[in-house]
Image (cartoon, rainbow, N blue to C red; front, side, top):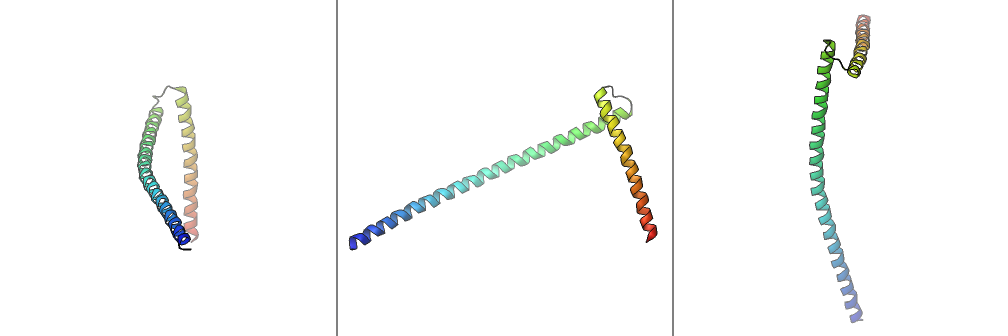
Length: 111
């Protein structure tokens, strides 16, 4: 009976050692994942900042091109077509802006 108890205790002790090793391995993996996750996050943030800077430059180029179009200095057909489309959109936006202002004035008068 005592031998069986010792055998059972050794088996339990071995099981605890294996479990402890697995927990330690998992903790190491989580720690490494956190480090890699942090590094990936930093890289993604830098990537997003660069994409934002690129978009800003493209916007500035577009604004400059549209200004040149308004001055009659653009000769590329596709660019002229795009600028004409933008010009039409601007006209429509002005109409809606004016209508919104008039409606706001009407609402003020009714109060």
